Length: 256
Image (cartoon, rainbow, N blue to C red; front, side, top):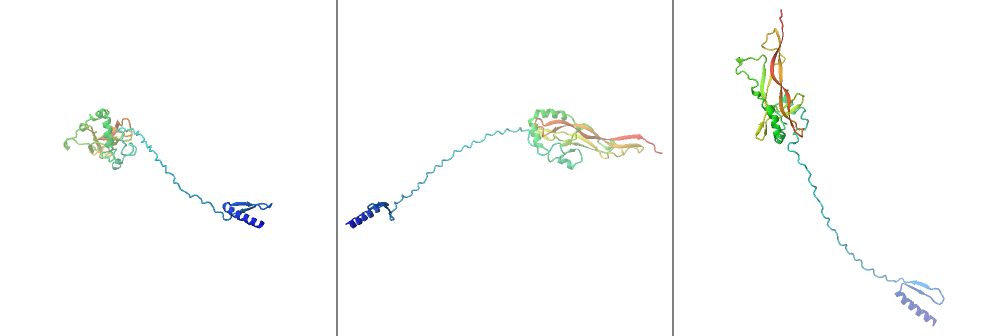
């Protein structure tokens, strides 16, 4: 009878163990024995649901405020000079001549002079009138035929309009010439006479006289342009140019 009871209890325990993963059985006064079921069926895990995060890429507002333009307009009479050096320095046109003036100049700032003269029109005209009244074409009348007069020293005479020249301070300056300003052309003409045999004896003077041909000069006033003067780039300066060829006579000597 006791054996049947034990078997019955064992069957009940086996049935209960199927429902529980841990059962403690105590028989009589023996300590409880813990049985861990090895046939424990794990609870099915819930399926993993990947919930995509909503995309909240809110476009950033565009705050591109254009910078205000504070470009102060440059005065029309201050263009950059076409040559990138000191205007008083020796210009390129001086390489082709030995004279202290240039009649041709590939770097002549005609555009800059024209705009500056138009801006300062009234003041430029007042300066120009001071030098334009000099009629150099009639300063010296040359003989029409060679028999009328013979010069003691040979010379070459020309009427020129220099574009650059060396002033009395020894600096090269830009001379305003052939510039059209408000339907008026600004020109400055001067007469130059150069000795052809400077330093030689005068050919028509007897040998008993000590003589030599001497170059003589005269001071001219020209309206000049200075691109580095930002307030009024015009002025009148003086220039020393050849004017005549004279014969210098020394003491009379008698050779025996």
